[in-house]
Image (cartoon, rainbow, N blue to C red; front, side):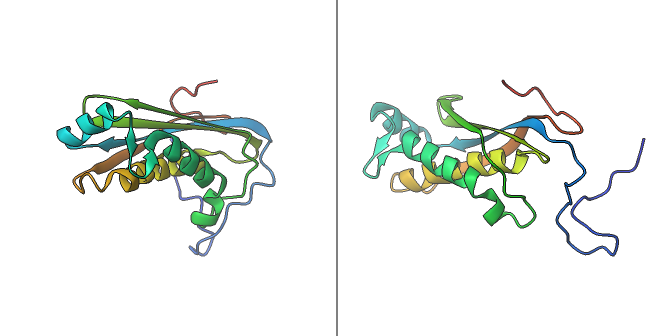
Amino acid sequence: MAKKKLTHVDADGRPAMVDVTGKPVTAREAVAECRVRFPPAVAAALRKGGMKTAKGAVMDTAIIAGTMAVKRTHELVPFCHPLPIEGCRFDLAWHSENVLRIECAVRTTHRTGVEMEALTGATIAALTVYDMCKALSHAIVIGPAKLLAKSGGRRDVGKARA
């Protein structure tokens, strides 16, 4: 098995953006999730109130914030390439009584993948949920955030959704 090496480091060990010029243009997708754990009383209040707080509709606002973050990932993460985002989908649903699961799926046709965009979308959506609910409790916990799947590049991970 070949030894793995970091991709964002040049021959002199300095940080560098990966040159994707020689990579083929392919359809690429990544799916990531982030979870938000609420204290039981807060989760019950949110469910009873239709996921609305004094700041507004929690899930709708999280989707908007997450989508904006997906499109701006290259401005937030230093070595991410700006990408034409062709699709961005969010699924927010209760995973358990107290845990909200936020899934973000991102698609593009390009020379590099969208894993960072999917992870950024899911985590910013989670941060937005926290922001909209923090008046109810500061004991809300965000995470874990993780990549569920990616496809279209040199190697696939997990099973991406079409």
